[in-house]
Image (cartoon, rainbow, N blue to C red; front, side, top):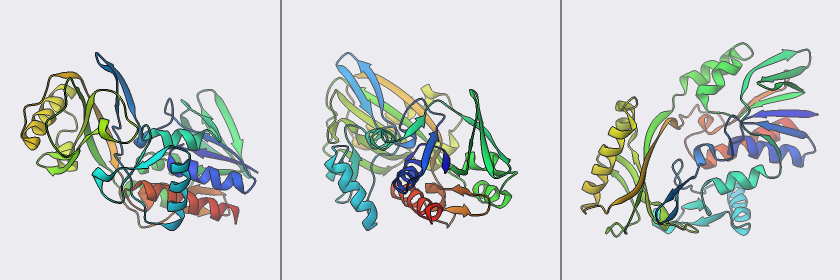
Length: 309
């Protein structure tokens, strides 16, 4: 049985792992150019070498025993490590957050830079249509943010599409700044400081190299209020707020950039996964459970188990 998965983030890749282990042939499609999604890491050249920024998810925590086993595997493989600065139960990907997605994707057939425009039901099969043509599968799985679920499923599963439309994500403006010298501030991260929801010395995370680098994320409310602002004004505001929050004069910047996440923090639909045995159509994603990396993993695992059953 051939299974097509739209979305190669953690939810889609976790489902793919479970299904592959059960003997299914799985192909994943993702519109991004490479692994990462909301666990992305950006590389930028500076006068002091390459700077690295985890500009999406900053870290993750572990609660579920099954997820703990998965994280132990990641740690053994060298793609995850504890980060005490964010808390006793905080983990990060190493040497970047996207290392986890890279490692999970390596075991599968993933078609990067391939946007699925629509899916079509043909008899007992699902046809995925994309720029390069189309491919048919016995089972279709949609593992993308809620805002991208609704257009794909509106004609096939209107109730699921409505659930996705009602589960709204929160946006986030992220500023990435690399400095010529160390910022003279003791802690490596701070939370809920005025307009700043989170700021961290990214270069202090385990496995990181390069110059002093900070990631500054606006709070959900501030980001929503300034969602359509120009990047330059967002940079000026959040860098100034970082100086105010740390109480120090910031060193000269080597590079400073901004990224707007329209769908940064998922909502919570109160479900684990969605699966219809009759049509062999399924949905997984953190938005079904809540805005945590572990939620994406749990949703993907649960859907794989339902499909295999």
